Image 1: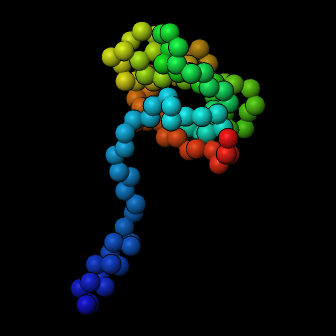
Image 2: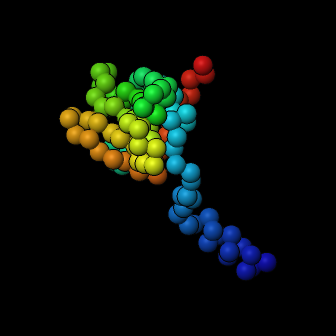
Length: 111
């Protein structure tokens, strides 16, 4: 019993480990959601469904701002079906972002 109690205390005292998860897909993101991309947190202010060469795109605002400051394009966009990276355009910079780097925090709004 003493061994079981020590084991329980050790488990409760450990840091939480984030388990691997599947990559984010465009249908997982909705307006109002917050996205953490690396160290930055963005709010999705507008979403466009997949069409033609685009695999879904999103207008993002910084947490405190109201005007869109960045645009996020889903994987496989621009005719590149093999790519699993997202494309983030902010301030004239084009950055490829792996799907594993994007964490979605769904909004609590019910639509």
